[in-house]
Image (tube, rainbow, N blue to C red; front, side, top):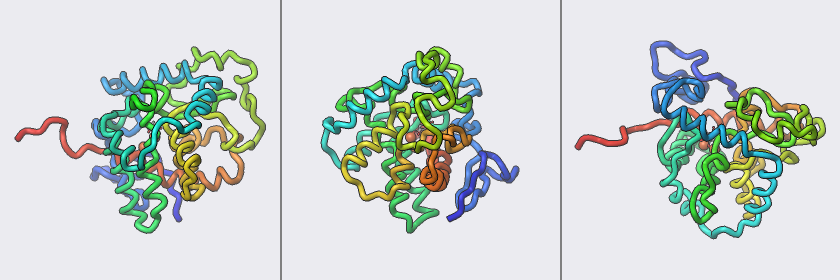
Length: 278
Ligand SMILES: O[C@H]1[C@H](O)[C@@H](O)[C@H](O)[C@@H](O)[C@@H]1O
Ligand SMILES: [Fe+2]
Ligand SMILES: [Fe+2]
């Protein structure tokens, strides 16, 4: 297995639209013609994204996340198959995403398909890709019709200081946990290398889908569960923040998450405009 850590547009061929990153053709531009994960560029899309993060960073507190975990951990909302859940996501667009405004079912299929092409024998990784964002079903009325800020977007640990690598970190100023002396130091309530399994992450689709997978006794390997649970933790898997909370197993699992992330991010594309001439 090769692990490639490549920043978008790095080592890319100026004449082409894509840069070859190991197996994957990494597109240079997102569906809006901009760089991937550019949260600063002024655009209508980014105004929506910013508002989503503003609320997320103000209201995600340690107490809030633990309550949601307890409530949704009961798994008493519905009974349905994986595919039925995929279909429910055809009605939702993710407001935290600067790169795509297509229904989420498209994103699931695009990610899984991109992985299948390069990793034809890693069935578990393909399945992980297909289901990694199913937790966004929290947006559906049958699951409480949660608002976007507590379902989507990058995630981060709670109970310790917010890292500056978190997208739109300026909004944490208004989060009450920033003023709580038990929480606002580097380690906060945790100890060095405690392991990500013991951390309260901000609540959202990652943790929910992890609870669903675990609670239904999935046979996915630990790396699949790690991907599902931490794929939105960009401060960690892209910027190397919070390594002091990780244990050796987390560091092993991170390699697979980094393989997965390229497909999650760079497979986002539109094949047609919203309205076609006929
Ligand atoms: O906007 C995206 C969202 O669409 C993803 O599902 C999530 O995993 C990412 O972390 C977030 O940045
Ligand atoms: Fe996600
Ligand atoms: Fe995704």
